[in-house]
Image 1: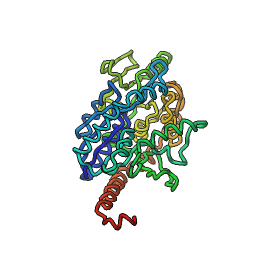
Image 2: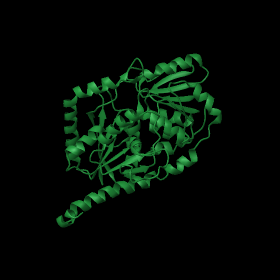
Image 3: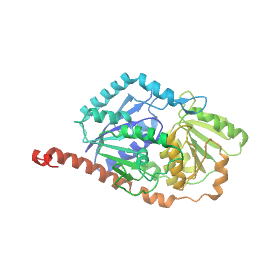
Image 4: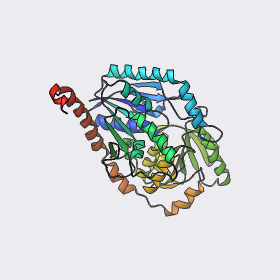
Length: 378
């Protein structure tokens, strides 16, 4: 089957999930015909994605979270105002998506949590069937453990999640662990994480440094502040900062690196622990390699707050409100890795995804080929 990807390009998680699923599909004899990546203005597609996706890439302007550079938190008001003013530009993005889909003639569209993917599907009903893939769909599950007193945040996030899945044939919810399937879970299918082949091939060892991954450069101030008090723990930090050099060496034990796929994988393989802004994909990679994780949700980023709670319950490590790495050094002596159980869950990824995606395409083909009389009574 021919597949088109539509990917929310903010951060690293959805991009690496798309790489992993493209590898799975190719091994199963299918083809990724085109990849559409939603981007914020002024952002570039990371080099690691361009190098590893092995399909034509078509960028388009897409809504994104806007940060308060002084506080390192999401600026919700500015995010809403900005995207309302850009509505005409997003209409142009829908045309880009439609042109690419028309040219590719896919059997299936895979949407990695891009809101314009859902809006496209609902406005172009004759397009191929769409399947949505993301961890965020797990937040629709009635047994998901939300933060206390978070009803409003939950409604807002799940409203956006439902927008991304408008017209979808199926929602595949990536999860750290197994969840019970229920009839009231909004048609969800719980599936294992999508880990790239490169992660599965690593041979983890432990060296004396912590690896830090952050979604926004402004969060680096917290790292620097902690490091000035406790310079004894070597830190290697990866950030998406186009204004910084490839390697910014602050001192003997603190170094910042621009996003670099091979370098990041090598440091993930050899680090003592991972400190991350509670992105689902980064936590999964660390769990697979048996690395303890300190999860620090971006302030006012409800999805990451949920990831942190779920990650702690799944045995990934600990969470903190700020980049206070003392939390990490305190829990390290007591950490018990869930690596074996997590690996067993991840080993089901390939066949489960191929099974579910092929089933959706087969169902769509049967509807098209069914006589009109059968459709009338289906």
